[in-house]
Each structure stands twice: as structure tokens, then as C-alpha cells.
Picture 1 (spheres, one colour):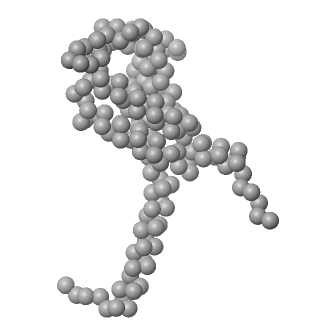
Picture 2: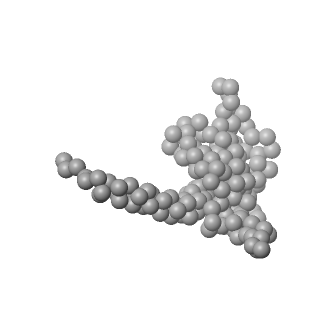
Picture 3: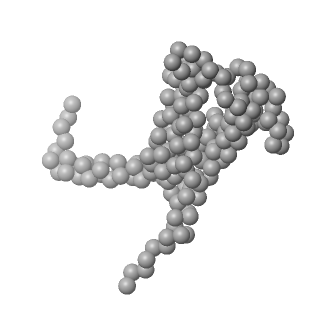
Length: 168
């Protein structure tokens, strides 16, 4: 393996640093919307299956929440309280929260809500942790940590509502 000469080493470090900074700037712009879309898709797809027309929960969804879905806590399986109401809330959340995420509006709150939903889903389907729930939880926490990013309505609204102060 050949060694670099001292002048080459001196020029290489700033170039590598500059390349790393460009990669970081690119990722800072692209990562938040990718995370938002990745988390939004499975919930939105599920949400679309819950409806049977406009504002009408499908009979299959009602059946699942009334008879099939159970919350697994302390070695027991317990039915949802008010399953019709829970089905309606879940159906609305699975459509609304992903739309908010994709738009980047109320992003951290939508991420938190989907993290809570993921936790409840984990209690209903404990075997899904390694295959789905860990990924969804990771995406939600990443969204909550990074925020909406510059390609979002949140970012646009902050810029509109808090314009930069002109230099004097």
C-alpha cells in the first residue's frame, strides 16, 4: 500500500471534510421527508381499508374491533372498551396523521401520535415487534427528534410567522 506525501495529506483532509459537509447538508434536506413518507405509508394504507364510503366505517373494521382485536396486558387478552368509538378514532387517525406527516404539518405531534398508536398496536399484536413495530417506532422517534425539515409546511409557516429581522 502506498503512502501519501505530506502535501497530499494536507489537501485531502479539507476535501474529505468538505465532502462530508455536503453529504450532511443533502441528508438534512432529504431525510425528514423520507422519514415522514416511510412512516405515513403503512398507516395510510391501513386507514384506507377501514372505510366503506365517505365517513362510514366498514363492517369488517367494526367486526375486528368488536370481536378480534384484544389488548394483551399482564398475560391476559382484553377487549377494547367502546370498540365502535375506538374503530372510528383509529380509522380517522390512520388517514389524517399520515397526511399531516407527508405535508410536514404539525409534524412532531403527528409523529408522537403515531408512536402512541404503534405502542397500542404492539399490545394488540405482540408478535409484530421485530418485523414492523420497531421500524415504525424508530421512524416516529426520528421524526420527533429531527422535526419536519426544510421541505415542510411547518418550516414554511415558521418562516412566514417569524420573518428574519432586517440588519440595521
